[in-house]
Image 1: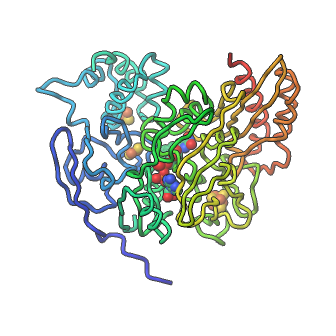
Image 2: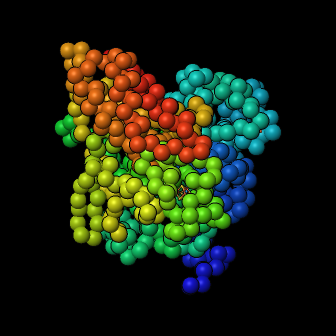
Image 3: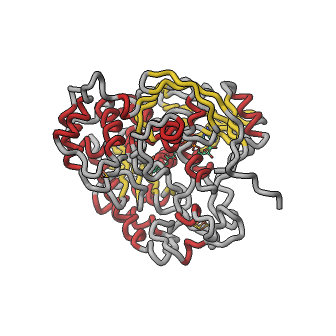
Length: 165
Length: 325
Ligand SMILES: Cc1cc2nc3c(=O)[nH]c(=O)nc-3n(C[C@H](O)[C@H](O)[C@H](O)COP(=O)(O)OP(=O)(O)OC[C@H]3O[C@@H](n4cnc5c(N)ncnc54)[C@H](O)[C@@H]3O)c2cc1C
Ligand code: SF4
Ligand code: FES
Ligand code: FES
């Protein structure tokens, strides 16, 4: 049997450009790095959380070119030139984003682990026009799991922020 | 994850040349990266196909034509798809999550791999992952597994929702490979496990899915998808049914029915369809036809509930289709 290739060595190194929260970055990456790993480990933006690393929990949700995606299931090297928005970029001039403020107002969290993913997903949900009623919000936010069960506050916060974000 | 090289190209020919010499295509990556991280998939070369001109959604006459790189979300949100092929839109919305649907391509959806937990457990026997190693699901936890089309070598269901709708609607695939192009029914993409469950589809080495063609017709608008699962959304099907009815002068002229969550591939139910032709679209006709769906079932320890749930799901999907104005 052929020897298995070593797993830890970096293979090729790819250079890619990303615009992260408005700032252009040039990065040297191992092709195996997900966008999530790049944010957390290369750029020290740890607001985006790693829950399952399998696409199943939504904690790693970010916006890429304006669309909400799970950053754990996509390779950074496949997104050369992309515009990436994370929770760290939402606050502007000391003012919380309207959806962040709504999460505070409606207590849309308990432990807070899922919250950055919920907020990024909520921004996508509102932009897609899927926040018309509590039932619609429940369905279109179902890609974000909250182990603490803060769902009523999350739904109320998204509903409250419609038209303000 | 094992190391690999990532090739990028905007040329379909270059991608196919790489694919024919052993590289794997990657589109949304939502199946492939997940399985590479678990080291179930170990490709040494990937070709990123996202820059190929294989996107878009269009109508050609009555046919809906969906590019292989169109995203699930994009197809589901298309106003013409919702109006003219509502079964496609509904089956897409019922699958995965909004984030995943923004990423996942239609071609990748058809080639997504099974959700059997043992397929991902490297220390469990799994003929699909490691031919000849046995099947841990047959004596293991198998509530989610198939009752139709199984073999002694594999009992995993095909997990796609939209594939069920496509099979019901007689959709075809156009594929392009080193030897040129060909077209065939989506149903023929999927193999039964038999004694070679590691061979899942009928694409030849290097063949690339280019587009999916869904014929229209009088049944297309009166069509619904019902997915029964452990939670209300963001979960794979226990049982699902796609049903489309052509009703004229108060009788059923034609019916299309396929089921998910029960078969080792998306399961077309032609006997049920034939039993409905000429009948009034009422509960009795639906129940009599749906009984025919369970012919030949092979339930396992934990999934016999699907034998009762399958006909009920079909009846409800037919009722929902019949109610479409
Ligand atoms: C948490 C979770 C929940 C999910 N729930 C559901 C659900 O409820 N219903 C459902 O239907 N799906 C569900 N999915 C599966 C999801 O829909 C698929 O992962 C997705 O559609 C795959 O598409 P992709 O573009 O990401 O494929 P990729 O991962 O890029 O590719 C998948 C496979 O297809 C091959 N491939 C891709 N494009 C082509 C092409 N054009 N020609 C030839 N080969 C190609 C690749 O080589 C690879 O083998 C879920 C996934 C996750 C992670
Ligand atoms: S059912 Fe199929 S995929 Fe699951 S363990 Fe058995 S062989 Fe593997
Ligand atoms: S960490 Fe990405 S979905 Fe859970
Ligand atoms: S607030 Fe704790 S997981 Fe959601």
